[in-house]
Length: 64
Image 1 (tube, helix red, strand yellow):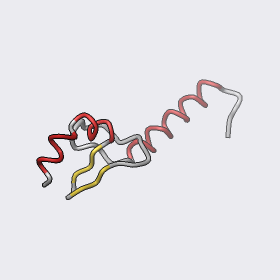
Image 2 (image 1 turned 120 degrees about the vertical axis):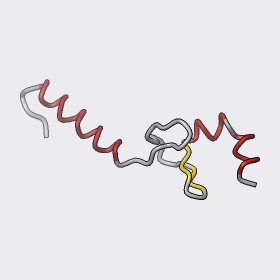
Image 3 (image 1 turned 45 degrees about the vertical axis):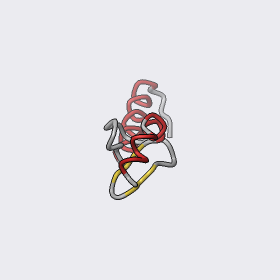
Image 4 (image 1 turned 90 degrees about the vertical axis):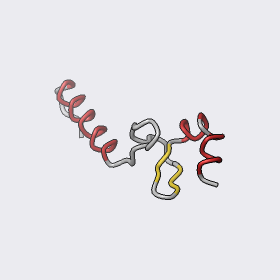
């Protein structure tokens, strides 16, 4: 619900976004919260797709 105070609304929106981000798993490679709807979770390790794509050769060797 929006109020007549745009600053308050922006702060509430930012706080809600932070709460949503805090619930996301953290990529074990880059340490950032995973923003994508899909992620790789393998043997207890979370990886975002950017890290998977950047380290594909290393990941294949490590998990074989």
